[in-house]
Amino acid sequence: MAVTTSLGLSVLYLIIFGFYAYSFYFGGVLRWSPDLFWRNDLTGNRYTGGEVMGIMFMVMFGIMQIGTVGPNIKAMTEAKIGGRLAYDVIEAKPQV
Image 1: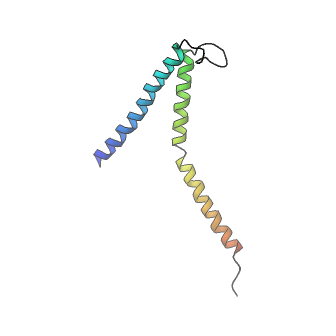
Image 2: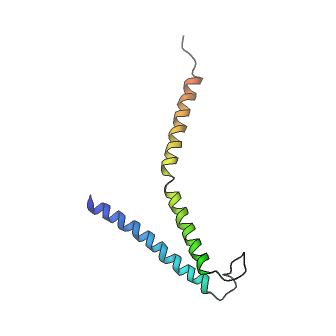
Image 3: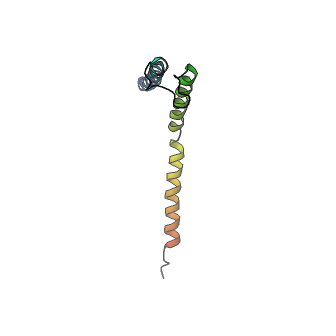
């Protein structure tokens, strides 16, 4: 049990820190690339460090919110099943 838990937690941390590493790498490409392709569309200038960090945290928070949507989807599925059962009872013809 403990080995499985620690292995799962290790994989989770590997994914999180891998994401951070990739974010900082790609942020460096956005910040220091001399091409005109990697320019901020709104300002026309190169990305600043603050913009890169803001993008990284927005993506990270979005991923965390997607991860917490599971219980809400489960509740909606259960409500859908309950609604179908209620409509089946309402539409049932009485037996005489």
